[in-house]
Length: 199
Image (cartoon, rainbow, N blue to C red):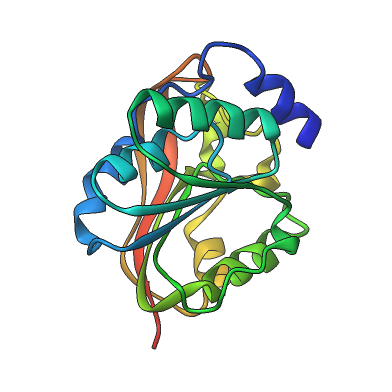
């Protein structure tokens, strides 16, 4: 998958645009100013937006091309983000160190997805917030982007299973209109949630 993402992000154009995801943008005001962790952050549109709002921003992805694009976007907007190129299993952030975790269209392979989610939650402080949006199973009926393998898409039941130590404030499956660069265009079906880590 690393080669796939490096190839996609190598183009000058931003694959998913430079504006933040609408759900993330709307919910960010729930988070007190502090440290945010963005997993599978890609070209940095959400991380850069958060940095512009005064957050201390950390981002991870396995693509060096993604990091290059994200750091350029940050520089263009006069902000700093701490961006690490790494596979998730190699991360060694301190436990309970982030005020919020952001997962926007972070579709990990199904064989490791639950393990990855559980590890990411360990980096979150008790009562820290999770902001999550990803494509639902029903996205296969749409042509607006996302994985074509149903096992990489989400249901609300899977969310409950993969985030067992989260108290959900909002969890819903909705149709939305995507306008995020050339690869997310048109109507689609997403699952999103807001939740806090159990103390």
